[in-house]
Image (cartoon, rainbow, N blue to C red):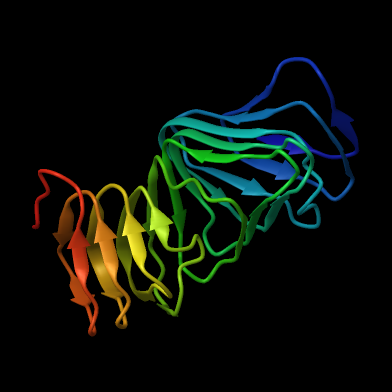
Length: 212
């Protein structure tokens, strides 16, 4: 377990965490990057310290997930959130990545329920986004543009505009409700659960696509 309390880390090599991570309200910030690694499930807690961690965060896990247990605000200049491998589960918590020059990039998986708030520029060119909530959601917190997109929960999700998926769309569990909004899909369509279209159009705009 890594606990950051009174004081700060600045300079030097990155902090490497393979267990749970806690940032306390007495933490003073710092610029030493945090790398979240390992194969075990991890929790990332910032209760009372939502915006106190000012360095880059990289998720690079060989398996399992890191779960956010409180909101995370990354608004420092050039502060990046990078998912290199593994799963970053925001699990109903709000996420902000909007510091000047800061970048959110996802080559792994980001998972959300569907009712969260995301502030920042979402990575639509790589990685996988998974929605796994159990509620009824009238819009998607990461917007309407994705690389790979999966719905895998007991919930029902609607997109508020044209849904544009550059990779594969997988409805593994739950309901995707287009409510009359169009879908543009460049990859494969897999539906093992429920799709409710409305009066919209699904356009397959890739090549060598499969419908399952």
